Length: 188
Image (cartoon, rainbow, N blue to C red; front, side, top):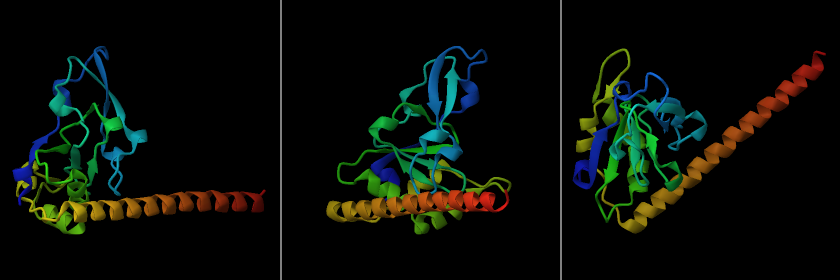
């Protein structure tokens, strides 16, 4: 099945149209390119603040169950949880909203982050300085048809992979601190 058969696909908000010139108005958090971990999760520390002159329509705010995808490389997809709702989605991202009762959208997020899918999207980029994937490119992505049980197995395996990567990153950070401490003691 194609992604547009099970989901609504759109682009985020063009910020310049809503940005407050006086910094007075409606305050929101804002997704940024840096807030997308390449491992497929949202890094809250890298959200920006955004002030809008008017209330932003809900279609441009994150909702639980959304998949948000970077339109620039790497085309990382993240799944929005309940505690990540009401964040402004700029036009740098595609918004994919579930219409299906038989597909676990976390499975779609894992599939969109697969190398196979990223190669497919890379072939469909436009621009040379900053290659961008058109939002319409997502409509034709063919989603493998797995049983719900197998979808959940893929999701659980992906969670373990991400957890392992986070632990390894933390280990590297700790090792770097350790090495800096040793070196600073050597050259007092």
